[in-house]
Length: 146
Image (cartoon, rainbow, N blue to C red; front, side):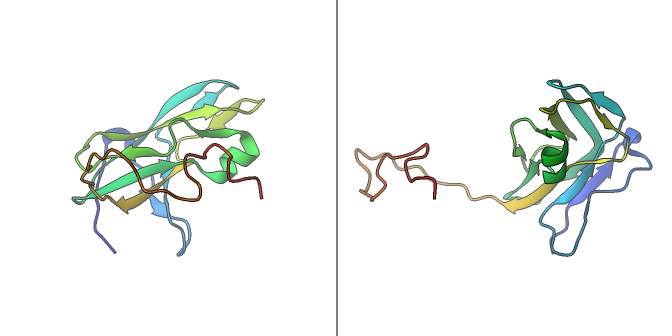
Protein backbone atom coordinates (compact mmCIF):
# COMPACT_ATOMS: atom_id res chain seq x y z
CA UNK A 1 0.00 0.00 0.00
CA UNK A 2 1.43 3.39 -0.98
CA UNK A 3 0.73 6.75 0.63
CA UNK A 4 -0.77 9.44 -1.60
CA UNK A 5 -1.26 12.90 -0.16
CA UNK A 6 -4.70 14.38 -0.81
CA UNK A 7 -5.89 17.91 -0.11
CA UNK A 8 -9.54 18.77 0.26
CA UNK A 9 -10.24 22.15 -1.35
CA UNK A 10 -12.70 24.64 0.16
CA UNK A 11 -15.56 23.57 -2.16
CA UNK A 12 -14.82 19.90 -1.34
CA UNK A 13 -15.74 20.37 2.31
CA UNK A 14 -18.14 17.66 3.46
CA UNK A 15 -17.43 15.35 0.51
CA UNK A 16 -16.20 11.82 1.09
CA UNK A 17 -12.56 11.37 0.12
CA UNK A 18 -11.97 9.16 -2.93
CA UNK A 19 -12.24 5.54 -1.81
CA UNK A 20 -12.30 1.96 -3.06
CA UNK A 21 -15.87 0.63 -3.18
CA UNK A 22 -14.73 -2.95 -2.50
CA UNK A 23 -11.56 -4.66 -1.29
CA UNK A 24 -10.85 -5.85 -4.85
CA UNK A 25 -11.57 -2.56 -6.64
CA UNK A 26 -8.76 -1.17 -8.82
CA UNK A 27 -10.05 2.40 -8.82
CA UNK A 28 -10.86 4.98 -6.19
CA UNK A 29 -14.30 6.54 -6.73
CA UNK A 30 -14.23 10.26 -7.48
CA UNK A 31 -17.24 12.36 -6.49
CA UNK A 32 -18.82 15.49 -7.95
CA UNK A 33 -18.20 18.68 -5.97
CA UNK A 34 -21.26 20.38 -7.44
CA UNK A 35 -24.68 19.54 -8.84
CA UNK A 36 -25.45 19.87 -12.54
CA UNK A 37 -27.73 18.61 -15.30
CA UNK A 38 -25.93 17.16 -18.28
CA UNK A 39 -28.13 17.47 -21.38
CA UNK A 40 -27.85 14.88 -24.18
CA UNK A 41 -24.79 15.65 -26.31
CA UNK A 42 -23.40 18.15 -23.81
CA UNK A 43 -20.25 18.05 -21.74
CA UNK A 44 -19.04 19.54 -18.48
CA UNK A 45 -15.75 19.78 -16.62
CA UNK A 46 -16.88 18.56 -13.20
CA UNK A 47 -14.78 19.59 -10.18
CA UNK A 48 -14.10 17.04 -7.44
CA UNK A 49 -12.94 19.41 -4.71
CA UNK A 50 -9.73 17.37 -4.33
CA UNK A 51 -6.05 17.71 -5.29
CA UNK A 52 -3.36 15.07 -4.88
CA UNK A 53 0.44 14.74 -4.74
CA UNK A 54 1.52 11.49 -6.36
CA UNK A 55 4.79 9.76 -5.50
CA UNK A 56 7.61 10.00 -8.05
CA UNK A 57 7.20 7.80 -11.14
CA UNK A 58 3.44 7.37 -10.66
CA UNK A 59 0.36 8.66 -12.48
CA UNK A 60 -3.33 8.64 -11.73
CA UNK A 61 -5.66 7.60 -14.56
CA UNK A 62 -9.19 8.99 -14.46
CA UNK A 63 -11.52 6.44 -16.01
CA UNK A 64 -15.27 6.15 -16.66
CA UNK A 65 -17.60 4.27 -14.35
CA UNK A 66 -19.12 1.38 -16.27
CA UNK A 67 -22.56 1.77 -14.71
CA UNK A 68 -22.86 5.40 -15.83
CA UNK A 69 -21.75 4.49 -19.33
CA UNK A 70 -24.03 1.47 -19.79
CA UNK A 71 -27.13 2.73 -17.97
CA UNK A 72 -27.03 6.44 -18.94
CA UNK A 73 -24.52 6.91 -21.78
CA UNK A 74 -22.40 9.17 -19.57
CA UNK A 75 -18.65 8.75 -19.93
CA UNK A 76 -15.39 10.67 -19.83
CA UNK A 77 -13.83 12.60 -22.70
CA UNK A 78 -10.14 11.74 -23.30
CA UNK A 79 -10.49 8.57 -21.21
CA UNK A 80 -8.36 7.62 -19.54
CA UNK A 81 -7.21 11.05 -18.48
CA UNK A 82 -3.78 11.24 -16.92
CA UNK A 83 -2.82 13.13 -13.78
CA UNK A 84 0.95 13.54 -13.80
CA UNK A 85 3.07 13.25 -10.67
CA UNK A 86 3.91 16.96 -10.72
CA UNK A 87 0.31 18.27 -11.13
CA UNK A 88 -1.03 19.94 -7.98
CA UNK A 89 -4.28 21.41 -9.25
CA UNK A 90 -7.81 20.22 -8.65
CA UNK A 91 -8.86 16.91 -10.14
CA UNK A 92 -11.59 17.69 -12.65
CA UNK A 93 -13.52 15.17 -14.73
CA UNK A 94 -14.61 15.98 -18.32
CA UNK A 95 -17.99 14.25 -18.60
CA UNK A 96 -20.13 13.86 -21.73
CA UNK A 97 -23.70 12.63 -22.08
CA UNK A 98 -24.05 10.31 -25.07
CA UNK A 99 -27.50 9.27 -23.84
CA UNK A 100 -30.90 10.47 -24.98
CA UNK A 101 -32.09 11.95 -21.68
CA UNK A 102 -30.88 14.60 -19.26
CA UNK A 103 -28.49 13.19 -16.66
CA UNK A 104 -28.72 14.80 -13.24
CA UNK A 105 -25.55 14.88 -11.14
CA UNK A 106 -25.92 15.60 -7.44
CA UNK A 107 -23.05 16.88 -5.31
CA UNK A 108 -21.36 13.79 -3.84
CA UNK A 109 -22.36 11.41 -6.68
CA UNK A 110 -19.65 9.02 -7.87
CA UNK A 111 -18.73 10.22 -11.35
CA UNK A 112 -15.44 8.50 -12.24
CA UNK A 113 -12.73 6.25 -10.90
CA UNK A 114 -9.05 6.97 -10.39
CA UNK A 115 -6.41 4.25 -10.80
CA UNK A 116 -2.91 4.96 -9.52
CA UNK A 117 -0.18 3.24 -11.51
CA UNK A 118 3.61 3.22 -11.84
CA UNK A 119 5.13 5.02 -14.80
CA UNK A 120 8.11 3.77 -16.78
CA UNK A 121 10.14 6.35 -18.68
CA UNK A 122 11.47 4.91 -21.91
CA UNK A 123 14.61 5.67 -23.84
CA UNK A 124 13.74 5.91 -27.53
CA UNK A 125 16.41 4.48 -29.83
CA UNK A 126 15.89 5.50 -33.46
CA UNK A 127 16.42 2.64 -35.94
CA UNK A 128 15.99 2.19 -39.67
CA UNK A 129 13.89 -1.01 -39.42
CA UNK A 130 11.87 -2.98 -36.88
CA UNK A 131 11.72 -6.69 -36.05
CA UNK A 132 9.31 -8.74 -38.17
CA UNK A 133 6.21 -10.25 -36.51
CA UNK A 134 3.30 -12.37 -37.73
CA UNK A 135 0.99 -9.38 -37.35
CA UNK A 136 3.30 -6.93 -39.07
CA UNK A 137 1.58 -3.61 -39.84
CA UNK A 138 -1.93 -5.03 -39.46
CA UNK A 139 -4.13 -2.95 -37.20
CA UNK A 140 -7.64 -1.57 -36.78
CA UNK A 141 -9.40 -4.92 -36.77
CA UNK A 142 -6.87 -6.87 -38.84
CA UNK A 143 -6.64 -9.67 -36.24
CA UNK A 144 -10.33 -10.55 -36.72
CA UNK A 145 -13.47 -10.43 -34.65
CA UNK A 146 -13.23 -13.70 -32.73
